[in-house]
Image (tube, rainbow, N blue to C red):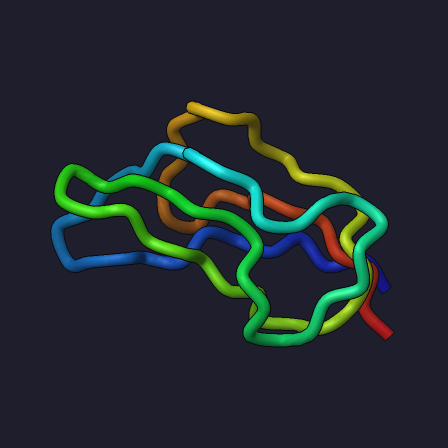
Length: 79
């Protein structure tokens, strides 16, 4: 099954974040809790963890792209 993982809300007043670094790549096997990417808010850089285990199919965002909480950012094939 392919799961589109959505960006979590990273703070009460954070309405969008910018992708600053990918920590994984398509084809990589990951576990729940593995870091997928780093994003920047107006105050800090935050690592975003995967909520599921599986294989990364593709990232749906690009470096420096602005994304909002709830927007899908990666497709993962889950067992």
